[in-house]
Image 1 (cartoon, rainbow, N blue to C red):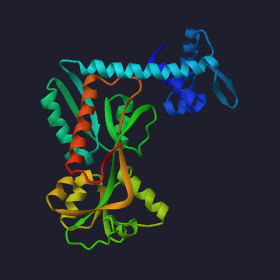
Image 2 (image 1 turned 30 degrees about the vertical axis):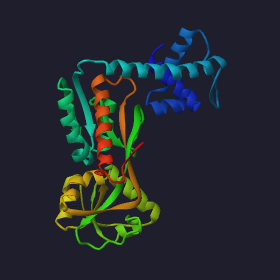
Image 3 (image 1 turned 45 degrees about the horizontal axis):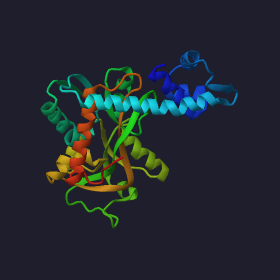
Image 4 (image 1 turned 120 degrees about the vertical axis):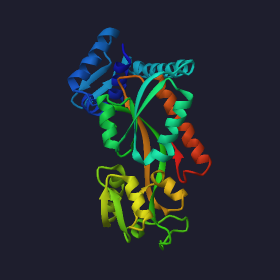
Length: 308
């Protein structure tokens, strides 16, 4: 009996279907069936009654489901507790981060990690969410932070922070705002926009809302560099829509003005492999991430952001 078999078993029980579970788990259905067959043979019981309409738990399966959840949670707690007692956290940890979080999170994360865990060789890869997802899935990265617009198939995911998308515009530009200080999407499209290119998550979020609203933008130009877009706004070359985190430094320096776009948000999620346990270095890094985010929010340095 392995943690993988228990996770597979619980996902089938949750979805009531081997085929649906195989799709969500990103594994071939025959391989999934073999894992459950091995589990049933080891236990000497039948866990599922299979039919054309799906799979339902037997009485033994119901008991197995409740105990499996408890067991997996116990194992996770044990891993966390033992890791917390480690005198020296060490080893290499490869972590993917979106460029948007560079100033607020990535640089402070590297600084604090170096101070507190000097024996950890931290390797940071910047990339858009789709690229980080593929690298974590392939095992090239141990974990990563991605937008919730990205597929999570085949990986564990945990929502961390939700923040608003904001309209960045040159200082002095007249912007019609709602009473709460935000702007409607109808106002956003009145201004020439410099935007990221799809499949960048921020462009995906904006395009989906534009499609629902039947609105079109005045596209000035596109770039895969959020930092470049923000710099162009500071020079007076139109506006852009991105998370506040991507524009924190320029805003604090007074180079641009910002207004939250009403109803547009992005959620940043942690993703990691279901097949490999998170190493102690990774657990510590996630703890540092939470601490840094909490300090920013408490100090008012990350307006609109909430931990989820």
